[in-house]
Image 1 (cartoon, helix red, strand yellow):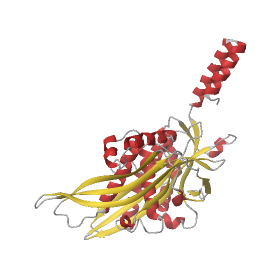
Image 2 (image 1 turned 90 degrees about the vertical axis):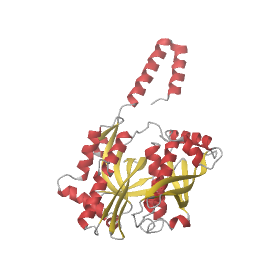
Image 3 (image 1 turned 90 degrees about the horizontal axis):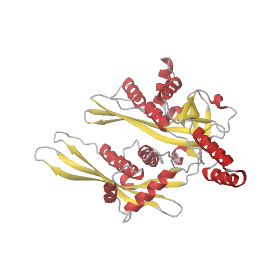
Length: 404
């Protein structure tokens, strides 16, 4: 499509030589082209996929594999389930087609897939109670099937926690996994969140700028607070932090975020295996703006106590965040967030980590809202250590807008 500035210059050129009539016709053609460009973009649904190389795939996603198989056995394969949901969502800027082959012959063949990046199933015992945690992290991944370049990515996740008076059975674990994918208590699960992300997504006609968390660090003191399943292997805790930050920015600031490369890709290439067995290698774009984050501290402080009653604590999270443009303008500040939790006197055991998680997630959620222009500016001014916090927020908002 001819840019607006070029169209107007050309129209003026013709007007001087060939009269106002031809200029009016050219401008009318420009406006018609602009209206045509706003028509829905055809996007093929590529299916359900897992991130990573094929080796070890079954070990990394055992319960997701079983869930997908259960859908096939029930007569509603996950491809069909998601395809129907996508069409029912009726995206305004996209038109979902069933097969990539329908886009043959086009300069760009856009496709979207639900790409699961991690599956966490943990059973912990506290006294007589057994806690079951199921957490799935994924991406709504848009890519050009011809060039195999990632075009847009929207991170998403869902966690399910249950407390039982007995060790969970295999059926109860599988039931928890199903709830994570399909939702529970009117909260949308991974499948619905994927459909919602696709329905709200837009594919710009121009080449957008890209945003990515490129560095995620956790101080040794903070690592001591994290449960074993988060730091089970080298780099796992850092990927966990990067996913929290990426999802907060994507959902709250409403902007796509390139996946954290250290967790999903090698050499800028991300492998994914579709549920039908096909393996594709996707090239991640080089980010225009990098986000560096360090989780520097966690603190639990007694806030108040009622004799013979409950005690309230403030769980605090502290971080250093940097997101700057080429001129070193943007965010570069230490920031903190506290969440108050009340513990009844009758509660003998307190699992502190869920409350610390709320403080961590709350920090980046509130920050992302400020970056997106919908947050509490007063909170940010008090939480950020930078003297020019208000100006940093404005500059960060400008960066976010360039990536939409």
